[in-house]
Amino acid sequence: MKILLVTSHFPPSVGGVEHYTFHLASGLQQTYQDTVVVVTTDVHATTQIVEMYQGLKVYRLPVMFQISHTPVHLWWYFALKKIMHKERPDAINAHQPVMGLGDVAAWAAGDIPFVLTYHAGTMKKQRFLMDVFIGMYETLVLPSTARKATHIVCVSRFVQKSVFRQYAAKTTIIPPGVTSALYRPDLSKTRAERRVLFIARHKNMYYMKGLSYLIEAIHLLNDVTLRVIGEKAEVGNAHVEFVGVKQGEALVEEMQQASVLVLPSLAHMESFGMVLIEAMACQTPVIGTTIGGIPEVIDDRVDGLVVPAKDARALAQAISYMLEHPEDARRMGEAGAAKVAARFTWESCVERTKKVVTSCIK
Image (cartoon, rainbow, N blue to C red):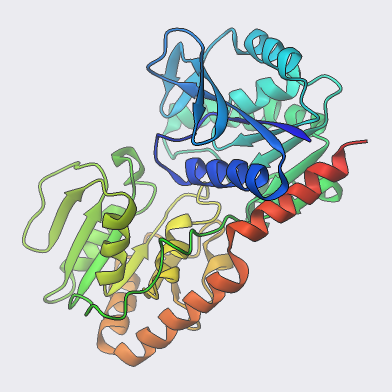
């Protein structure tokens, strides 16, 4: 079987969707001997690039301009049509973290079975003009793409209920996984005392992921240090350290050493919270908010704590509880690691996606 995997975001760029699509494509090809051809975008390209990337054939389409992190080009339809004609895929699997390329792929697919994997609850960013534009997309364009889809994969129940409720008969929930060989506990190391970790790879995500409320919460506590992993947006102080972007083992070490990881998201575009399961795999206690798919990942007081969004005082109380009750924190960390091992693996994600795609091929 040949699958054309269409995604606006793909390695070597870094992010949750990039990890998801790479592990899915690699897993389908290595485990089931499927041929997977990836179509993605490259903001630096001026013409179409065709290359091999870690065993995968990848088409990288040029970008005319970007709206926030959404790449756009007016000729993608024709480029996709040519690629589909050349590659003759048995099925198309398009991934939508942002509007655009996946929608165009749905229109270009014709009679080819089309599986849409949707990674966002809403794409709205709590910016008025941008959200007006996104609202038009979610009202007018996305329903058309959903109707064209043979099947829809949602990364969480929240996505299914909030975006595709009327298409429930043709939706399947398949959460992402964790690379267990990388994200793992290191019991030989002692965790740093009273260190809180926050991770957001792009600084324009800091607001939506609630960093300002977390900083306010840190200032309500004594002798607590917050380490921010991501683009440096401002100068830190005695209690807040902006340490830049980290990847791979360096990022895992930050998780292994943290007392607790906090994801205090504000926006319902937080469909899942990849960073939560990565930290949980390291047995790091986690705190999240009652936003989007986060409550599906964290069982409150079982494998983490869940607090209301936009509530710095509640965040401070949750952080304080984790720091002042180390045995409870350790227990929740262990429970989180067990949950990830049982429910959030790439092997499961790949197997379930394979079944969905195969069922769509007549």
